[in-house]
Length: 469
Figure (cartoon, rainbow, N blue to C red):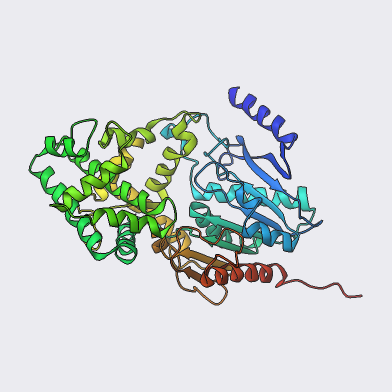
């Protein structure tokens, strides 16, 4: 009864198409389980529309929902929006099931996560696109172009493969499409960026600092590590999970510093601090870490604290609203992308965090059934169904930033003449989403954006048959 009332409320909101300028919120009723005829339960999927530039019966541009609450920015500004203006297209953005307010179940208990997977999400898109053609364009032959980033980029790729009759082209910006459990290439890519934009000395300092910290943990020097790194809870060096969570936390801090501002200078400044004269590489790491957390009395870096964000099950809780538990479930059952350090020596973050650590993470969050064998089989199934880095696809454009570490799970070279790839040097994640800036964009970035614009125009008009008198 509660869920029925929630759906009624959602549709009461949706019927009014809540407006924010030209941007309107609405809701689409779709099935909880598309593949079980005995289950006819429905839920409301949230979406937004911007039709300010749309021509009657014109094309449909969709920003595919990623593993986060719905984002509407790219249907109100940026390159996709600009192309929609040129093509007279309707702009839509959908919210991925289980994220934000698109909730097919009452809570995120493990037994309720069975319907959180790519196949269900793709079926949502298929039904919704059919509905959009019937309801907005009144044109069953309206051209459909998808744009996706991150997990939304993977879904856009897979949708073009699975439902080619419903979509005419896809633009995938920084979309990781190959499932990979021991995602060693990610940390290797971070290491390459430290060398390229920082220095070899910086890389060596981080490499040595992590190995000294590991050795101290092995020697049981818990008090010294806890004091120097200002840990809130003393490091339990007898607890392997706590030690690895500590090392992973240090790695996460460096990753955040390198990537969050999407600016090469962040890497240079971090390395300049690391390279200041000190008596040891560990002290360089400690001093840098202290500055990063200078406004905190202490820092939480144990396993229990690491897991907190993944254990809540109330959709209204902040961690669920942020999508932490849902994203982890997709990682454990479909994607992987765990930043292991034990699988490669070509990265500077030690060698203690292996796949077995993330198996424990998955099990703590969702149950002992998620064994290493189950996880590997799930990820293998993803690549088997969709082709990994070699998807059978045409009318697709894959773009990646040359500094984005996720690029290692996306095509970096043309798959075929109708599925090109563009690597944009010296740029971070999804560098090509903004409008073309002929004054400030690099030549390579301008060329990538112009290529996307040209390809989308081609996809729309490639099969166009003019009306003859």
